Image (tube, rainbow, N blue to C red; front, side):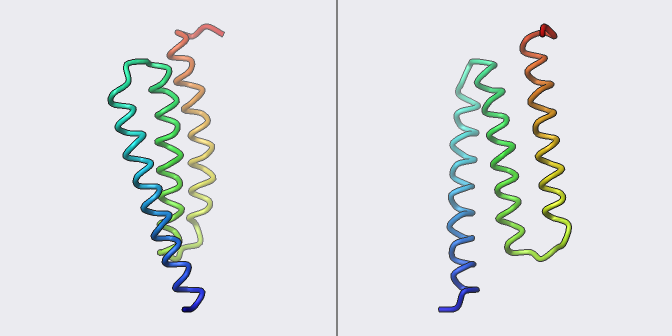
Length: 92
């Protein structure tokens, strides 16, 4: 077994783990009634989407994908701050 085959096996396993975790978080986001929990779960969903994208980049070769992930990470922090402002109704 070559190292390339091991990479494909481990990438497939990680894709399954990320997919299952995304489904569990989505289920929890739908069933909860608390807005603060939904804010945290929205961040977790965003992180799992980024993780899924990183797993996808193991299968596709491109030179820009890691820049996209870094920019998405910055956007995730900004969306978290803005959603926290909505929950607190603008109070600091």
